[in-house]
Length: 435
Image (cartoon, rainbow, N blue to C red; front, side, top):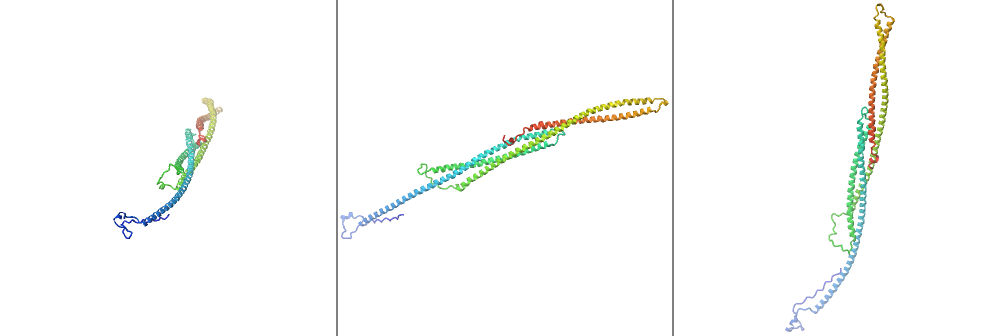
């Protein structure tokens, strides 16, 4: 700074009346009006010099101030331009960072939307598969109820009933697994949507910030939409730092990506669950059908054998009936000679006196009666045996006919009721939720 030259002190005015001190002094009343307070000549020159000096000092100081002002103006203009360019560059860099994060958030939102749609499709597959399992469960239940309508002795715990119980238990377990998987899918869909909304809010804030910074980049010194904001340079207490700003978005992206990967893994798990359950149900269905086939063959074979024995029994009953008739006829035929022999003996017992002789004829008649009696007793005993055998054959016939009817009913239940209904069993694609 230029040194300030102190202004020359102006000479003080003389207010005292000039005194007559010498030969040149005038006195008297004629000059009384001119003897007022005036500067002396030296004082006048001194005052002029002082004013010259003051004007020079003021010009010098003004020139220095002009030079300093021009320099300050140039420096201020350069500084303003430099700081403005730097600020614009910084805002431009911020725009790039914001655009980068905004693009990442948009990509993550799109991926979450696509992943959520895929998971929704898997959820619908699970629901369709769960609905489809109602058909095999009703089939298995109906088959078990039909099995209960079998008659003795076919009301047994055979391989068919065992496989049907396994099938019903398997279907219940599959239904519980599908329900749990559906709940897990619903929970994952909710998490996907929550993180999508979080990313969308962050994206929306960054879009607004990007638009704001983009508008700031367009401001210039000749713009008509700029004005003073005296307190705008003060930082807000709630303002974030670049580190916390980037960390916030990074955490949002990290959590969103984590849920997306969890959703992908869940979709793969759903594929495995649906594939495995569909294959297990079809394998068990094939096992039940195979058991039904074997059981029907066993029942058919047993019925054929029973029918074969029934035919033989019927033939034996016919033969035995003929045998009983023949025995009865033989008894009748034997009774006639016995009557003749006994009549002869009776008549011969009426012979008089000495004529009542035990002759050879008498002995022969006696032995004939004895022999015929024994034969007749044997025939009657054999007739009783034949009649008892005939009754046994009749009981066997009735038992065989009943067993054949039971086997026929069991075959009808297994083949016509159960296996016909099992033809409606869903396919693997339906059990997997594709249809």
